[in-house]
Image (cartoon, rainbow, N blue to C red; front, side, top):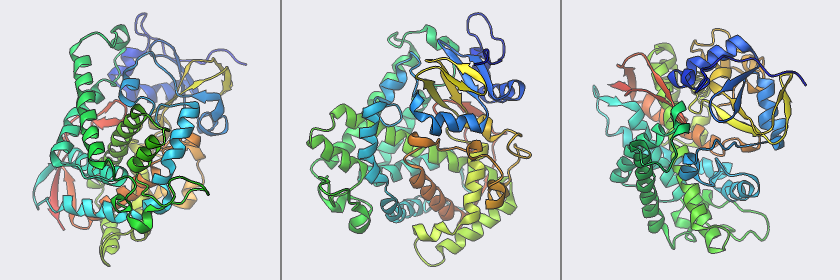
Length: 464
């Protein structure tokens, strides 16, 4: 195997940590442009290697996936927040939890949830008035929280609870923004940031506890599944103890707990993971889509035309939005330019060879959607918004993992179909009624667990 990959010089104490913290997005792109397929970085307590070639990304996520695991960074804040939920668990724990969750994300059940998504979107947009200016990212997060709780927890969430969730996302997100000094401060130290983080988790868990309390004793009543009696039942193999019972995620987990297959800690970890990951990424994808459409009126008009056709025959359905081909291209292009999850991490279980270099066991692989999606190696004019990239002909000319907003391989996002259906329904609902005009500064981004705007996203509503 070859010698160590090239990479940028860093300072003696923090390595490349300051450069990454100051501008993670510009720094990663500059590294990819300067050093090629594999870039060696010093970002903290272990060596980190940035992968920039789709072929290497596919090997790490798909073909050689068994050689990698989710890394531990010596910072237990992530474990404190998400525990052994699907995002972080490994081995038999992950396999068990993924198998339990699968029925809640079965295609037939997801399709049956279109009505629930449309009802929430309709109710939300009914509150908007012509000429109003709204902070779109907050509005969409409020809407997607309600949808995920109804669809996956089989419950309603009050406006006050939604407000509580949103107010506590800021200290949670701040804890995961790049900061090389964080490795020098123990998590147990009572700094202001650590105290706010712990309080936010406690508050979030209290909201989830309230939802679970409202659902106790109803997990065997099919009427609680928002997919309805026809769409809810996803039969498992013969002998499946759940049979035709409701398949919202909370019902599935509550029944598993009754059978002794889940602990209260397992339940908590999965619900926190689902609440945070299940609403934030979709809200962000839509925020960036509306931002781009505001600056591209011709594309916005085509989306509005498709939206009008989708709602012309009555309530939105999965079949109705399935024909919104151009809208899907807009979503793909917005997630290419602004992937809500902008980087993934893996850790080799043994020494591996990638890009001609030896990558040592226990190092961290950084697999960045932001970098690959905006590379001129795979895209012409990569910083330009062009939904035409997603015609079948043009798409087929690129490597498979030149685009991976939902990850890939065995650990691909379980909620991909749910998120895409939800996004198209919300786009159709909004665009059939309003044009949204962005009235804020040039878009600035900050990195945390997901990629957020670093400021409000004010949009003026113009009724069509």
